[in-house]
Every structure is written in C-alpha cells, then in structure tokens.
Length: 575
Ligand code: WTA
Image 1: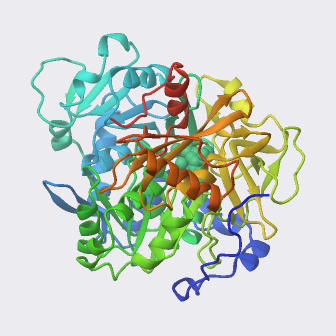
Image 2: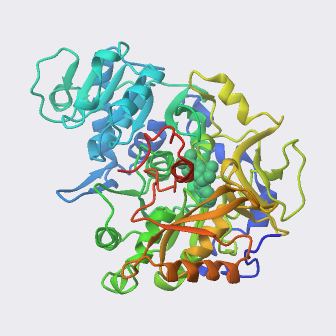
C-alpha cells in the first residue's frame, strides 16, 4: 500500500464543461472519427506541414497569427500566410541542394522564427527533421549527426564552431542563419538563399508511414537513442490537442518547451498548428518575471509547462503573481516528470487553475495518460489513459497486477504516434516490446481502484529499503512540502543492514541555511508524514540538483556521485 492521499480531489470545472465526460468519450471513441479531420482521409496525400500550415491558408485563415515570437531583443508576429511563404521558400532552397524525401536534416539553433520556418520547410520536401538543443557541445552534436547520417544542418554562426565538420563525412550542407565570414562551399547563407528563393513550392506528398521527425533521448545506460516518428503521429497530435489541451479556435497557446525536446515539437509545433491556433514562443532563459510577462502580454489562454518550472515559480512566491494580469488563462498543463501534489495545491490557490498533469515519452510521440480536462484531478496522479488508449501495470512476466501494486507501466500497442524505430538499433527497439502486445515504458507506477495511475519512478530508480519497495517520487514530493525545501532528488544508497537506505539531495529555498538541525527536522517531517522506512537517513544539501534540459532530476547522476561511479552520458544535462 502506498501512502499517497487518494481522497483529495479537485473537482471538474465549468471551463471544460463543454467536453464530454471521460467515461462517455471512452465508450464512444474511434480513431476513424479523428482521422476524418485530415485532408488525406480523402486524397491519400500526406504531409504534416500541409495540415499544420498550408491548409489554414487554403481555408481562408491566412491572415491569422500563427506565431507570436518574443525574446529579450525582439517581438514578431507571423501570420499563417507568411509562415507558408517562408517554409515554401526554404523547401525550394533545400531542393536546390538536392535534399528531399527521407533525408535527415538537423536543426541546431536557439528558438527563433527561422527555426520554425526551416523545420516546416524540411517537412515540406519530405525530409526527416532532427532538432537539437542549442546547449549541446561538440560531442553531443557529433554523436547525433553521425548516428542519423544527417546530410544537412541548419545552425547559427555562434554554434557553428561546435560542429566537427571534418569528422562528419555524410554532412554535405550547412545552412547558416546569420552572417557568414568564411568562404567554404559547405556553408550556405540562409538569408541570401531565402532572398532569391521562389515561394512556389510543389509539396512532397507522402504516405502515413513515411518519416517525420527524430528525437535523440538518453536512457540510464548507453548512447542516446534516435527515436524515429512517422507522419501518422499527427493523428495523435491532433486528437490530444483537441481533448487534452482542449484547444479552441481563438486560443492563444503557449508551450514553454524547446523543440530539442519532444514536447517542443509534438506540442510546441504540431498540435497547436494542426488546430490553427496562435502559438506563442518565448526565446531565452527562464525567469519568473519574463514568464508571467509573456502570459500577460500575449493574453495566453492555454499554457503547457513542466514541474521544474512550476516549482521555480512557486519558489518565486505568490506576491509576484499579483503584479500581472493572468485573467486570460483558461487551462494549464504539465509534463516531463512527476507533478508534486504540493505544486497542484499551490497552482489552485495561486493561479486559480487546476494544473493538469500529462504522462507520455519521446518514444510514445504524444500524450497517453492524462488528467482529462473534464475529469476530477487527484493531486499526485498523472490521470487516466485517454479514450482510445489502454494502459496497465504488469509484472515482469506480463501479468496484470492488483490495484495499488507497483509494477511496470505498460501501454497496449499500437497507437498512432508510437515510435516506429530506434535509428540503427533494432535490438533497442525490440526491448520496449518484449511482452507481446504491450509497450513497456521503463516507468514504475500503480493504479488505484478508480483507474488513476500514480507514477513511482524509473525502473532503475526504485529503492528497496528493509524489503520495502519505495518510489523516489513519493519521498521527493513529501520533501518539497517542507517549507525549507525547494527541490529534492532521492536515491537508494547501499546499506549492510537495510539493503538500501534513502539518501536525499536537497536544494533549499531562499532564506534557509544548511544545518544539522534542519536535517533532523526534515527527517522527522518525512517520517511522520509518510513513513519511517521512507525517511531519508542521509541528507546532503546542494545549491543545485543535476537536471536534464527538460527539467528532470537526474537521479542516476546523484547515484553515480554517491557511489563514485561513472556518470554515463551527460549530453542532456543543464549547465
Ligand atoms: C517521465 C517527456 C511522471 C517518465 C514527454 C517518462 C513523467 C519520461 C511524466 C519521459 C509525468 C514524463 N509524471 N513522470 N507526467 N511525464 N515523465 O522522453 O519517467 O523526455 O518515462 O518525454 O519522463 O521523458 P521524455
């Protein structure tokens, strides 16, 4: 039995009351009804960029704002027509250099309007796009370009020195967005080419199973994996945009994720544009003031972010919120790691919004288990499988386990946006499907008697102390309820008597200083609030915890530090 509270509920709200109930939607569900939305349902001609951009222009909505971009230096509003024109032009530029269907073209640059236009241009010629985080250093960039066999790259002058060109024989062309000083046939000026490119483009029509995008993602061991998605994924992007993001015609939508992370493409590009809404993109780094300013200035109605950001906003306090007009917000969502109940309670008070947790993975291509908007929220639970999706908790042999028993979180195959391969690594791909009929996520979770799923940790993170299996998230969530704790990462540390003990790495909130008294107090706080076996017998204070660029606390790094082990692949770690 777990100790999380199952009785706490935030009821469904009027703002989503136009939606069907979860049960009704589930019983009526059919993928075919969703597929009818797409032009290819009639024509058989498929292209994501057409459905996301060109189609809205063809339907007379060309003057609508597609992209509201801002960073510290500029503000730009780009209409659907302008986005169509820019991406058509870039498509022609790519064709001029012989790039087309099936080629891998990567993008390595900070968020900017050009990033979005070039990504769409790549899709328009039928190439497969691979977005990379701008923070990647030489080896991370090289590994990904090499493994994917990318033939072209779009980057900026500032990032170009991190591209080891002489070690990448397959990389033929580099489009540089900005001033080009070097004379080199491999380097092509993006702006010069765009100036002379025609805006008449013949789209490359594809099949549903043709390539769309590749995202490299790290596991706990080995090199990053190239997760390969196909055009068919758009069914899931559209569907979840409708029923999870609850997007409506006039929404101003902001997904805070970078396109280097799957959230920044599935939900920062595809879902919003398939729905023809105005998409807000904020460049630059996180700051509470800038973020609230972005919500206010753009009158954002739907906001999709991550627990790490919500925790930092919580840390910045509620007074700050009063300085901004956030009255346009209608719907708030979270993804990437477990959303602590304390954050949900705080969001309910501070924003008067229920923060809707959503669970999915790079490999799944789209949301699968969610706090469906019309459903009551149980803080700490990631929700229930979407209509059309079946999820279960399986033991290692593939049997379903009883409610409240921790096991492997699995999804019944297939669903439209399921990855179609791990690039160059069929064996890795097969591992996910080792139990016939199921996709094994690598997460552990349990289900309660109402079918809500409760995340426990990655398989490798599960702690066994005195014979009790403990999910680190449960302990971390308790820890962040303590007023001194800003963030916490919990690992199992080998122990002769107990098998493992719990060790917590903690960063403190402003105004608190490390001390033995504070450690004792925190220990008691968990012991009394959760259980003795879950209380951290060791606590170490850190200024910052190691996190991925998408905000996940890297427990395997904490563990490696603790045990003096190699830390493995660190290419996705924050500075
Ligand atoms: C974790 C993110 C708890 C989980 C789109 C998963 C979550 C991994 C949640 C995938 C959530 C993601 N609650 N854990 N709502 N969402 N995770 O590929 O461990 O970056 O397997 O994709 O993040 O991370 P990825």
